[in-house]
Every structure is written in structure tokens, then in C-alpha cells.
Amino acid sequence: MPVSPALRVTPLNSVHRALGAKMVDFGGWDMPVQYSGILEEHSAVRNAVGVFDVSHMGEIEIRGPEAAKLADIVTTNAVHKLKIGQAHYSGLLYEHGGFVDDILVHKVADHHYFLCVNASNQDKDFEHIVAQNHCDAVVENNGARYAQIAIQGPKARPTLQKLTAVDLSGIKYYWFTDGEVAGTPARIAHTGYTGEDGFEIYVPPAEAERMWKLVMDAGTEFGIKPCGLGARNTLRLEAKMALYGHEIDASISPLEADLGWIVKLDKGEFVGRDALLKQKERGIRRKLVGFEMSARGIGRDGYEVFLNGAPAGWVTSGGPSPTLNKNIGLCYLPAEKSVPGTNIQIMIRNQPVDAVTVETPFYKRAK
Amino acid sequence: MYPENFRYTKEHEWVLADGDSGTVGITDHAQQELGDIVYVDLPKVGSRIDAGKSLGSVESVKAVSDIYSPVSGEITEINESLADAPEKLNSDPHGGAWLVKIRLSNPGEIQNLMSAADYQTYVGAEK
Image (cartoon, rainbow over all chains, first blue to last red; front, side):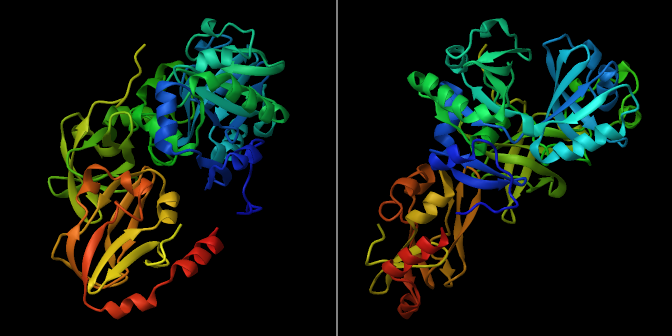
């Protein structure tokens, strides 16, 4: 199948094609959805190690004497509390409190912050941040300067450790180190989007193909598998990690999305703070909650949720959980009903099918 | 790859007719496109179906796909084993993982469907 000229490609596109991956248009990017099969790839990450090309993700860098000030103005989490080498999950909000994007903020140096943002939002995010920049700071849209490879699973550390002199056991969860991987400068972050232990490395695009092959070789003894967006989605859903366009978007606030922990209302002014304060004062009307199907059927993204026979919300993400062997999902429900143990019905092909709200995350790795 | 004695639809179902009885399934191409199949929804025995109408659905990890009946008639049997082992549709779509048996109300409909050779050309062109 020829690549549509409109689709953007990562530096690993030809590697995916050579591996026989099934490719899809993912937000304008030609990306692998699966190689050997979603279930097999999912299992590799839960039990051994998997490698993902996430080079489509955007990178935005903020530099300058007031880089921290700008980063604190545009994001919800407390940037000024980050130490050099530390990262956190955060939100980029509109004034009305809805999400522009969900992002990772890394503090590289006192005057340098590195943001990892969603692929299809990177240009929008960049413009949003630039529009708020009344500080002594420079904002750079640097997605094209980085390839990103995620190595995830209980064997991610021994796999990557073979390729670097950096002591990976010394990098705490949600911390990162700038070092070398296979002789190439790399940002090595102990982060991930799978609910499993693992690392995400940022490398120059010209090195991506060599790096991918070295990681695959290093992981061979553990049964490493290349993994696509399909497994990435089932893994992150089990771990209840949000996906932009599903759990969150411009119409949803972090409080509604059960992401209150990334909002630091006491840190001072930031874009969206007033709206969130009001929301907190008045109480939110809807909230994200997990569910499990109790009857046969799979509740999927966009399906309507009924409560006592009346429409009450919608499924944001849903599907089979390969690890738990259950059909699970996330949905919005009226806030007072978004507690575990509420009986709901998911409308599946015009038939109400029983489900029940449950505690999340669905899956939590043993530490 | 595609059995000579089957007839095929553009929506990637197959039917094997024997007198006024037809066995229906999805093709190997269909299962490949879907990926890991995790759920199958089939009609009730005794229900009537028209050719081209939805017979049920097959779900993979990622997506739901309608199954369209290649023929008209009454459902006489469904493959109960798929409820507990939907993955058989990935491993044996042209054999043990048949979906339903139908008493054909119009056996002539079979002639409207593609032969194995035509179907092979059709899926080759789709790629």
C-alpha cells in the first residue's frame, strides 16, 4: 500500500514495513497498529519486554531565565517543584479549564524544560504556549529533532542496560538522565504509558533505526517483541492512563477526568485555574470512572451509558483486557454515580448490556 | 488458500452449499484484517435472515465488524464453540470456525457470489 503523501512518517517507518506491520493513519501519522498481534504484543510487555516507536510524539522545549515561570503558567502541575532530572505528568489547559493536551514536563536544567506532547497536538500546543509567553523565555517546537523509542516491561531495564553505561537502577521512576546509548547522546527517561516498568529514550532521528535494531538484539534473550499502537492502547487502558480525544479533550477538565492530582491550585496563577476553582466550588457534574462488563459484550469508545433506563454518559475507551481476561472500559457518569459498584448498562448495537463500575486502575504491576 | 467449493462475498464471508443447506463463515482475509478475535455475536437458531443483511458481528481487540449473510433462509444451527473460543476464527476460519448453518430459501442466490479464483483476485486488488 503506498503511503498517502499527506501522512507524516517517523524515522522508523521503513523498519515497520520491513517487519510486516499493519499500518494505520493515526492522527495524520503512518503508524504500526500491530506486528505479530495485539494479544501477543500486550503479553510481551506484561511478562517480558516490548519496544514501541513513539517518534510521532512531539517535543517542545522552553528555555531562558523565565522558562520555569512560563512552564508554570501554561501547565497545571507544579513545575517549580521539579528537580533537575525529574519529570511529571501535567495538563495544558484552556482558560475555560478544558484540555489543550496532556503532557510530560522534564526539567533538564534551571533554564531548560523539555515537554513531551501528543503527536497530533504538537503544533496546537506550541502555538498555545507561545501565545502565553510574556516571559523571558524561548519556546521551540522540536518534534523533528527527536526520535523516541519506548522499551517497556519487566525486562526493559536489563535490555536497555546492555546498551548504556548509565546505571539505570539509579534512575528513579519519573526521573531521567542525559547520557549515551550505544555511543549516541540520548535522554533516558524512566517513564512509560503501559503500566509496566520501562524507559523512554529520546535520540537523534538519524540514529533511530540503528537504536531500534540494537534494542531488539539486546532483548532477544528475553523474547522482546516490537509492539504497535494496538497493544499500547490495551496496556494504557488497563493502567487507566488517559488518551487525548477519548478520556480528555477541550470539553473536559482535569477534575472531571479524575486527574485532580496533576492540578496544583495553590501554586499561583496558571491558565485554566479560575475555571477549575469555580468548578471545585460548585462541584463537578460528571466524572470518569472504570467499568467491567457483567454480561457478554464489549463496551467500546463512544457507546452510550444508561443508568436506570435513562442516558447518563458515554464510554471513552473500552475493550478486552488481555491481562485480566475481562471486558473493561472507562466512562463518564454523573459525579455522584461515579463510584465503584454502580450498576450501569452499555448500549451495544441498540441493546442494553449490564456492566458495573469498578475501582481503577484495572491493572497494577507488582513492585 | 481459498477452497474451490466455497462461494465468497465482497464483505469477506464464505458459504458452502449442500442442497438446501448452507454453511457460512468469514474468510482468512477477514480474520487477518481483523487481528485477534475476542468475541462473536451470532443470531438465534430459528431466526430468518435475508442475503446482504447483518447476521451478527465479530469483534477483534480493536474493532467490531458486521457479518453479512451471503444467502437468505432460516438459521438451523450456530457454532456454539465460538462463544468460549472466538480465537478459533483466527486459526481455522474456513473449517472448524464456521459461524452458522442456514436452510436456504433461495439456493440460486449462490450463483451471484464470487468463485474462489474471483475472490482471490478481489482481495489481491484490495491490498
